[in-house]
Structures are given as C-alpha cells and as structure tokens.
Amino acid sequence: MNLDSCPNCGSAKYIKSGIIDNRQRYRCKNCNYYFTVNKLGKRIDDYYVNKALQLYLEGLTYREIERILGVSHVSVINWVKKYNIKRPYNAEYHPTYKILNASELGVYFQNPANIKGAGVIVTELGDKFMLIKWERFRE
Image (tube, rainbow, N blue to C red; front, side):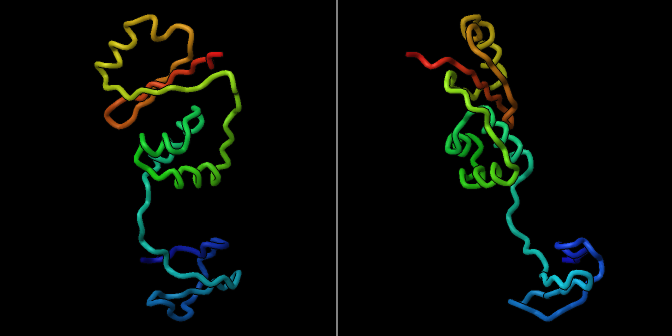
C-alpha cells in the first residue's frame, strides 16, 4: 500500500524508518511523527453509518438498530460518539417501527387510522422500507 502523506500533519515529506511487525515504518520530516502503513481491514459502508445515525436520532435504541441493520451496537455507539450526535429528549412520545415492502406500505397508508394522531416517517432500508411512528405514552 502506498502512502500519500503523513497522517498527523498531511505533509508529503517522509522517509523510511525501519520495519516493525513486518510492516514498513515511516518518519515525517516536518513533525517527526512515526507511522506505519495502514492495515487493510473491514470497513462498513457509509450507507449503514448514515442509516444507523438516522435511526438513532429517530429514537431507536442501539440494540434495535443492531437488529435492523445487522451492525454491532458497539459500532453504533462509537459512531454516535465520533460524530458527536445529540438526540433531543422528549419523554411524551415513543417511537414504534415496522419494516414493510412496497406493497405492504401502500396498504398501510390506505387505512386513515394508521396515520391519524401521530407523526410518521418512512425511510428506505435496502429493498424494503422502514416506517417509524411516534405515539404518545399512555397513562
């Protein structure tokens, strides 16, 4: 894997500086930062990161997001921390969600009782759709 710049300062001025764990080590001439070639590892597609953060903002829990997207709840927690996402707090409403295909979604919206008295959002989830509905807590 070729390097373009120092990961610390972005400079293109670096030199080889030994080998550690069978990986080439480099030293930046500008900031004296030592670094190695990045490992090739698993990387989750940005689509899933965006969906996870969107679902988190919609009020779903980390484990619910894990079950829906198939991404670890720990990864979702790390993304929320990384991007400094703050969810607005509102105790009067709670979200419920359903995963439907296109025909089921059409049937759902034909019944006016399903959309009366609550906020509804529909988001694409692969080849299906996720319907999130906010309802007031019953006392």
